[in-house]
Amino acid sequence: MHYLNGDNLDVKKVNEIIFSNKKIKLSKAAENKVIKARETVERLIDKGEVIYGLNTGFGKFSTKKISADKILKLQENLIISHAAGTGDYLDDEVVKTMILLRLNALAKGHSGIRLSTLKKIIKMFNNEIIPLVPEQGSVGASGDLIPLAHMVLPLLGKGKVKYQGEVVNSKKALKKEGMEPLKLASKEGLALINGTQMMAAIEVLSIIRAIKLIKTADMALALSLEGLKGIKGAFDQDIHKLRPHPGQIDSAANIRTFTKGSKLMEDIDENRVQDSYTLRCGPQVHGASRDSLAHVIDIIEREMNSVTDNPLIFPERNEVISGGNFHGQPLALSSDYLGTAISEIGNISERRTAKLIDNSTNNGLEMFLTEYGGLHSGYMIAQYTSASIVSENKILANPSSTDSIPTSANQEDHVSMGSISARNLYKICSNVAQVLAIELITAAQAVDLRTDNPAEMLGEGSYLIYSIIRKYVDYLDEDRILYPELLKTKEVIENGELIEALENKFTIY
Image (cartoon, rainbow, N blue to C red):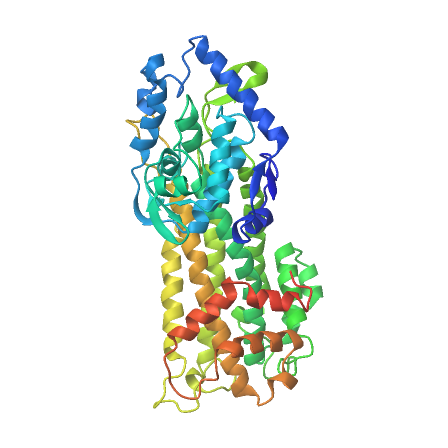
């Protein structure tokens, strides 16, 4: 059980809750804060004060005062009217993370929602009632209004959900769990949908992927170095101490760990004094992406424990104040930044794959890593796939945060497009997993062409990496359909099997 209090989420905890199906509950302190904020809302409404979103319209309609007898209808209309998304549905884990992050923000006690409403959302989360949320519609300011409205619909008994392996009407799922559709009270509709939780959810799940990709990139580089008989000196720790970027130092340390004891890697000689950049500069490139990731983790962990709706309730001041915490610019910029950083991991990996298959650059191996070139194409076309993917990533890595289109008749005249930044990052991470899979497969083939005894010739870590790849992908002696192997190796990266095996035996960063 994880007790939400508005301040205690981080990337590791989100990963544990979402992927281990951990249950959640509000802490007692959070419950008390929620109650106090709700009491403040009700006091101010009883006094007849005009407060945005409580007894006014929304956006450009903020000047329209709503009569007391229409306040509850106002909240329901807000959810219904804003459920205007389109496109494919978000992955289940994205929707679950959205709910988790929204609950954590509301638990801070500045949104004015009723405790009973939060408890209904928690019950929905714990019982795996997952709303169907279209991916398109958010412009990333006034929060993720549209996707969050779709997230809320099932609480009202509207829309569809995934429940017990089926897509069903939300009323059916609620009934099976003994829940009645919710009747929203004043401020609650706005409190539920005015926030950054879709883009934050996608970004944090992308970070979880990116952490695996960063580690896997070092593994792929190590195996490629073995297959290409790379030169050891570039990874000497004294080199990296002279340029002490933390990520670079960690990446070089991983390569030394994985390749320790290698009989394939070489020292310099008079004919070959240094390798090309894709090998020699691996720690510098991987390390820069590592440092970018560390910066973005700082941003997302602040965001996950922030209040991002509007207006905000301050019980100690007995005030409701309108502001702009819903603006997604921090997430838009950080998602764009991380998208570029992870895209670069794919770029350098594809170049190593190209080096591995080309007999003008692979240090004496067969063209396309096949012993029967001409009759067989070997890994010629796998590199096409990798090239296609990294080219796609270059388009996806173009920053969405530089764009803005005014909405709500120019009331909302600068928006972040952070939802698009986050969605692009999510796709980039998936793409790079496939690019790294292709490098690992071709590197394993290069090793087999280089030696009949990988166990004897490879470094201890490199051999473990090689062995895991060979568990799923056989040596390519003649052409076969590669598609299943590419997908399976990608799965081994994404499900953590490769990383877990290495971390059980070595200290890696």
